[in-house]
Length: 124
Image (tube, rainbow, N blue to C red; front, side):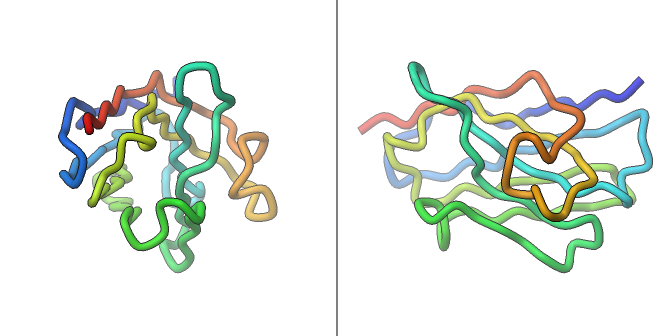
């Protein structure tokens, strides 16, 4: 059974940092792309960042480019999202996901398994 468990969310002031982690089990992680999505209240889930199965390619949505960094450790079956210079508009539930489609790596439909999410709240 595939499980993805996120951690590291919390309340932080604007300008602060958080490190989100996602631990995977029940699958061979090194053949999967990994991504982070977020959903703010009243909004649709949106792509945040992704890293290819090899770790050789990373992708970011424009508003987080230069502030967020995605990384993975296949041996530990983990993906992390380092979020710096946080802004109130980053407030959302953050979800990690794994999938096989490199074409759809920035889209929700490119992912097969999802975690339950971790709340990130940035105060102004």
